[in-house]
Length: 410
Image (tube, rainbow, N blue to C red):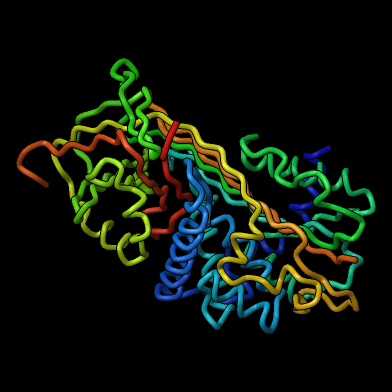
């Protein structure tokens, strides 16, 4: 049944897919506009990290997934609601350039002309809208998200809320290779729901230089709480891009194909992550990327880890100044519909998963937004991640951060 639904979706979004391939209907963004979108995403990434990291423990998320979903929402917003979304997401005043830039990023990431076997890794991004085609959606809005986000409209009956919820969750599960399940919680869909916006992103890549499983051994990891735990530490000595900047060490671990890598940022001082993480900035991350240079020998120790995180986005986004869209009194989503109803966001959720081992990394994330009404040194460098660190999985050709997280304990 799901495959049939997917075929209907693909048929409905054919115009969007054509635009993604050919650029029909919108001007191609220039390099400056593309860089601006990447900077916006990376800035939102760190803003969200600072809020989420206030809670102790390891975490993982995809700001890219959230930026995609909320950019589709912003395309339907006006007035103060739009202004708050633009500020939180760091979007430019001219939203048209942001939408066109995302179209270009999406095309590069999905890259249908180059199969996974030639890229060396699997990376896919999918967007979708769920609602009734009979609802008075504005054609301009549907065309915008179809053309720039590849998001066609799944015909959905919210009078059967549980069936609708299960169907959307199945789509997310399929698009994330079964890594993200039950994205929308029970009760999040009701007969008052009018639209659901979803994004799903999936990545699986093997290390360019795999770790030898025979060298993995249990070693002590100093958790943020101050306790030491034995964790499986992967070992390798090889040439890597490496840098030392102030109190930080940076190591870039490329995946096969070298378009995507994991950048690990490790405080030199054990137990120093909490003090240093507030200093993270977009410019600093850019400086780190620029400072990376090949070092012939780096003695690397990185723990195997797996993180599953989930977020109720409402309180975190409210901390970032996005408040109006969650209120049926103040939300202005009239750029997406022309009904007399007052629509607002009733639920906003995000889930993410990452598994890092000797072979490589598998990562996935999904975001759901429910809209409805209410009642080189000469000597070998040493990089031993035996204490808390942060990491980013990034698309190197554009420098877009796809996933971000921290490992604080086990």
